[in-house]
Amino acid sequence: EIVLTQSPGTLSLSPGDRATLSCWASQTVSNNYLAWYQQKPGQAPRLLIYDASTRATGIPDRFSGSGSGTDFTLTISRLEPGDSAVYYCQQYSSSFRTFGQGTKVEIK
Amino acid sequence: QVQLQESGPGLVKPSETLSLSCTVSGGSVNYYYWNWIRQPPGKRLEWIGNVYYTGSTIYNPSLKSRVTISVDTSKNEVSLKMTSVTAADTAVYFCARDRRWLANWGQGVLVTVSS
Image (cartoon, each protein chain N blue to C red):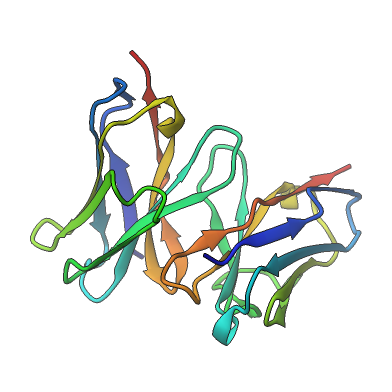
């Protein structure tokens, strides 16, 4: 099982700030098969990034993903109030998919 | 645009079997993997397992003994059965289409395990 650990647990930032979310894997995520999702209360997760750095259809370029191996990052530049949500990373390099525990982004 | 809709009882008694369906519209179940994921209230997402349209399955080892996921290509539907449920199985259950990443999700259905 590939265990994903996200940090920080909570980020509290102001509109216009830059958010940097981290996701560490307990073993190499081959082919950079890692995705990021945004989940707002009462909603299903929404795909933001796949293959570590490719934005999904309709996702603004304020969202960017980077990293490889065991160390991945989601960056949200120029935070907007609507970005308030929990963000999860997920690996699909193993047939046993796993998710991180999530990072909550709060907008002051 | 493919749409997924979960359905099933919102309340299940302890020790009984949870049964959910995921109806796929706007696309075919063929040639994709279909996943079930759950989220206990206030907690993280947990992957339950998936099924390929051919019927082959992969399960989370921690749930494997209690879970069956199946696909009905004639109905364009995916199903989840979980036996011997307890309060710890109370969660929102989501189905999602797998293109390796999970691009399409249903809205989820809350299942409460309680007598």
